Image (tube, rainbow, N blue to C red):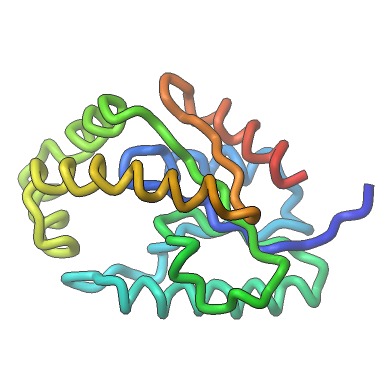
Length: 176
């Protein structure tokens, strides 16, 4: 099968496993034909907002367009919203929503933000307490799921009770 490069945004709310799948995807996908990034790897400013996310999405799309010319797919793992897409006219963009039940998301966020340092970092980038952050993510989960169910460019992978390596295998099936 011939590789037709695309730009993939692996998205979802906090706690679905976006960052956890990155090392597994790097093992499963050919490095010559797939560039894999963390959406936040260029840094997240204090009070990161919609405007920052849209600019960052535009950066990744532009990088992906360069990669497509070189026959390379670009995979970006991190929160992105298909409704905020800067370039709706590009047919080579796909979304893979990582989804999970509310309890799974809550438990994963609680585990992530247990130390004073991690709670301070969360407050810096989101201006939220852990409790508010959980509520915001759980509340937005259904909205994002609904957006993706209506978008032909989006596939959904459920991560509830699945280890990252299994989720990565499901993602590679979508990509290939």
